Length: 194
Image (tube, rainbow, N blue to C red; front, side, top):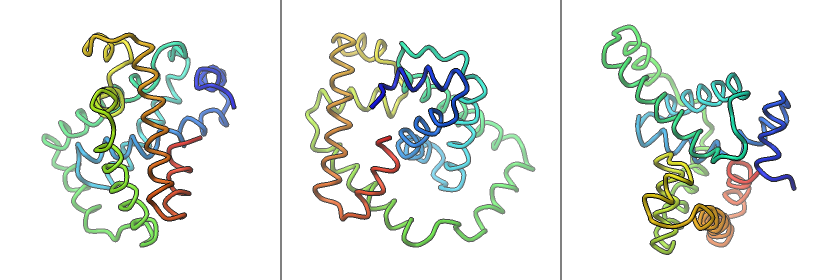
């Protein structure tokens, strides 16, 4: 299995399969991250697509040797803040959003149940992580900090941050496999692990 750095190099060269791999890997966690900002599932999904479109457009600027997740989450945070600012000042945009809220949800009931179950298991897994690993995960994945920024904040090495992230993602994946049903395990495999 190629490393994330190898996949990012291919993506920079215009490889759409590599882009799809990155998209599948980060989609679910980015969706949850954005949903916490905007609280509206359809808007969060639109924001995820906007962020990945932006990633594709600026792929030549990505440095595969630096933390991609930090870069991705910074772009996502900036995009959601700009969107919320626009919503607060743009009447037409607010009306469009409210009309979306009145439309029926496009996800199937099965997808909604799986997503809720995944979110519940995800939160349980986070609660069971060792405190340092949880803090690293929160800083990198949920606050969009780079490995270097997280290392500086916590007074640990960049390698320690990377190790905590790898072990944290593995723990979440294994926790969902152990405590979720097979459909949730498939869901997380599709959404988190490439």
